[in-house]
Amino acid sequence: MRRFAGVARTVSELPVYGRTLAFGSAVSALVRTPTLRRKLKLCGQITSAADSISANIEEGFQQGSDRAFARYLIIAKGSLAETVGHLQRACGQGYISAAAVKPLVREGDELGRMLGGFIKYLHRSDFKDRGTHNP
Image (cartoon, rainbow, N blue to C red; front, side):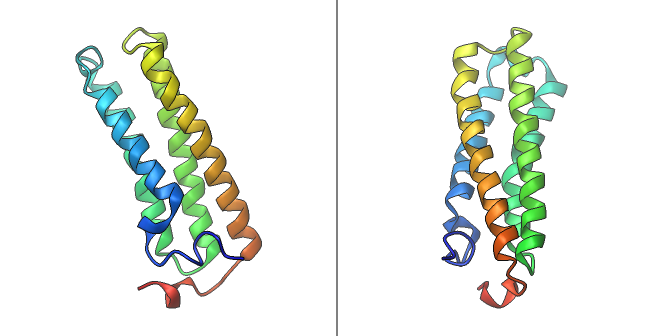
């Protein structure tokens, strides 16, 4: 049963990809708040880490094997953890409210589980010729 990449012909068909785009949009909206905007370096770090999540899924989807794709998902998962960590630190420093960060932390946890499951699936399936199935 190829629930993930085997059925998806484009990266946008992956449920985890759509969720990461929505997560990135929510993070971007939060970063635009006036209090946080004053911390340009922190804003840049948060934005860069959040953008890296979906970018690595996109790049990985184009790889020739499931194991190669899984490597990019591991990087995406690390970027997700980095994003959540930056948000929690910004909250701890008083730049954003706990109420604003809490739903993003929850969504980040769920995305981390989704990515982890997807990585395990790709390692088990180990399909070696993904390129012939991409449009």
